[in-house]
Length: 312
Image 1 (cartoon, rainbow, N blue to C red):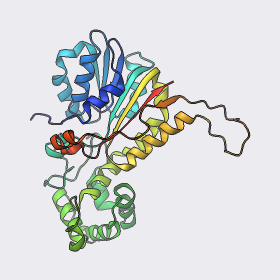
Image 2 (image 1 turned 180 degrees about the horizontal axis):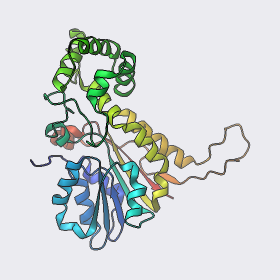
Image 3 (image 1 turned 135 degrees about the vertical axis):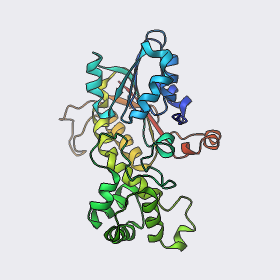
Image 4 (image 1 turned 45 degrees about the vertical axis):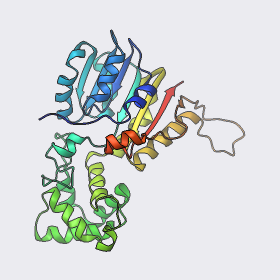
């Protein structure tokens, strides 16, 4: 089955990465390889693309989609938090650009069979890397009610988190919750019908997003990665991040701001004593959003938030 995914904000991402012949770039989230292919086209003849994805389906697809650039690519199956390890394997200390396209792909939603979508009846899995031990069913069927509530509230910003968690615990006592459709039905039934009628999104959207984030530890991984990203870039190297919800975007924004500022001394001190210097400069003072034409063509792009920075 073909790996279907439309790259979001492709032109903008390539612009901010400043792709040039002979340089080395990393696509940390290959997905459908749309961004990766555009990078490969611009780094010819002797540039290098390091492609990473924790979903083996994306790696398999990249081997086919990027076959004509085989001499210019190195592919790694794993999480982008392990970028330093992958760089050491190709004997590279630093690179000229890093792309992060966060979130879930169309393939994972439509064809992965792992329960990412509330519109399908699939096993409640949600692991992007199927080698991971914990899947969504483990959390739904084993976590305490308050722990589930916190996941839905904190990671999904779900208003009805308490009612949903209570309903899940009640239902699982009767029968184990095993599929995405079962979970979606429980969520929908837990929210007052008068409230769901006025929502612009499906009632289960936030719960499914929160579960996926929890299963894959997405926010912890992103925060850890952003803390070290400047160390892996050459001077004038670029970072471009495509985020899809406020929690991701806030992490990226705060880390870029901290790297721009450098000093972490209390404001009351007359002079800096920490010795930290700015290491990055923001290229996007305000978040960049997709245009109306792209959103009309690819509705999945509508929530995209792009931020970019350059190493000093």
